[in-house]
Image (cartoon, rainbow, N blue to C red; front, side, top):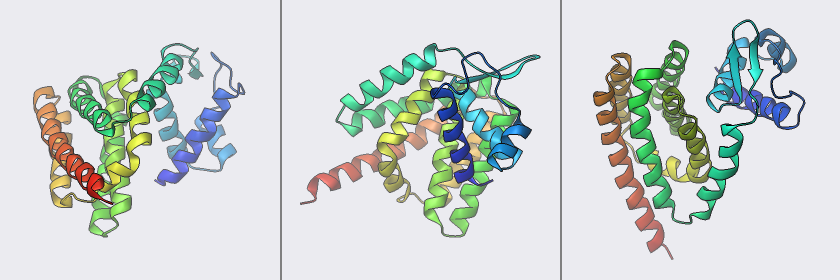
Length: 232
């Protein structure tokens, strides 16, 4: 699956919602119709729709298909979270906030994830492994971050999902710098352990695995921050 294609579909669909082309409460075109419109595969359309559902912009209704949700919490969060996030100049504080979100999401994900979300998580984990094996670290890191976004979506908590989207926009370059310092074998083992814990629906184990990983990442973040401050 081409992640750039999914991102393009996602952006086009968001634009259709925000510019009023798709009105609140209305049914969106079917997967087949969207695939023909955008000239892409149904699986790419399905993944873009899944992201929009996680953000609270779309919902499935029995007998009606997928519809645009009326403005509510998602609109409120879109206004509030970016304002708070971009008022904070200290990236370390934002990263600490992100660390807490990831640990809690790992717990909630055990209770709420769908089969489709698990398939998406395993897809990104496989692609991460493949790209690391091919020594393509940038692509591997992209899928590593997508794994963490997917775990947030698995939590079913819109506030966590929305906050994570904005955090990754703010700290994307920092995350790439941090992940570039990882021992990729350790990263692969972490993902394998986390997926196993999620499949077992074991919130204690999944949160402990995530906490250990996030603490290690946090230490690397501190080192990068210290080195950047020392630079002339």
